[in-house]
Length: 274
Length: 322
Image (cartoon, rainbow over all chains, first blue to last red; front, top):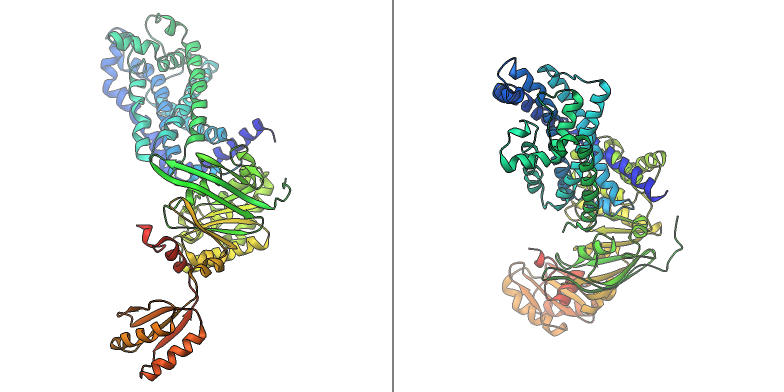
């Protein structure tokens, strides 16, 4: 078997192993889907009316309904972004339990251990997105574009999830314990997802925050999905990142993978539990 | 697949490794002829696990060279990994997978196809008496069962070299006997085994030869008998019925023995090293009888590896553990 085939076949075995782990702990999956549903409900009904006015630009019509439509693309993207923290915890716990040592003593490709983890987490993102879609439809969100465009929107969101789980892999392999991994995996998620167009229109963010949000790859992902779902309101956004959101989103994802895949692989080779 | 048989299965020369300021290995040399069991013996922190991690490609040495199954651990780690099976001190089983799934996964990662992997997993479950629990998650396994599963994982690819890092630490006596049986069977199959242990009796029972390390250095090597011979002579032990008789008994033993007798008032025991074995035993009993002392227990012992360890390092094997 040549090297490339071995990477994917080993990656498949590790993916299977990780998904079996989820299947044996279904309560974990409940937690992973409940939190985003909570986010949908809280944002839709607690902040909905007031932020909705900013979104629609006026108090006329149903500002809450408009906001719920605006919100869903952002919540989708945020949820899969947060899923990368499971990649972090997964690696940290495998390290602690000696599973990584077992893998490292086997004649397998080291990239496949990481690939198996990111692929399994991707499968979880798909499950979570299905649940979120149902929750969205319940609060009045609708896909206004074509089904093809909607499919593209989901693909962009999943590509972003995949890219972030390579960052998660790197952090997980750096973390010295599951406890550290727990917070290290989550903490950077908050600025990443909140300083963006996910919850409020990016032009309402003041000064530097606005610029950061404008260039935040996460904003590009959200804007792309929102556009493809047909959920945009008001005048079109200006500036290069907004005008070329799909291109910028995809390029960012590729760049993240190109940086963090080799970093994680190098870290995996170095890591040694004592 | 099988590489040509090497006369020496494992060879390490001048291995050193430091962690920060701690010098874990300070020039370890060892050699294991193919089909032999080498016992790497030493207290906790002596460098056993570090040596094992280097030989199994998990850690790079600061200097020195090592070859396993004819492959250099630094130049061709992947070839080394294909030839070895490793079972660790902390059983690395995935507790969410069943016993069967654990072995199946390892078999697949060694490159077996699905059918072969399933067959091998069932075969090993059978051999390690885990068949009836094979479809339960390993989470519910006892410590001994987990250890057996981990050991089975090391044997999945029928490796020519098996490395067992403290395979019986924390096992009950029954689990220990079972593990010893497995290792004995490996030897019958011609497998080379590197075994680390802090139990002297284990090395005595299983190993063809022993390397004793302490503070990252080899302090002795040889067969168990050779090491025992280094302590010299035999130990004559007797227990007297009354502690008041100890001084007299000690005097008698000083006359027949080759060293200073050691007495223990608590156990009413007195012991001494002797050169002449049974002759010294008979002589001491005759003289004790002359003093009107009849021992309640008497014995002539060959030195244990514990005695050897004490003689070599100046401390007992167990003492350093804390």
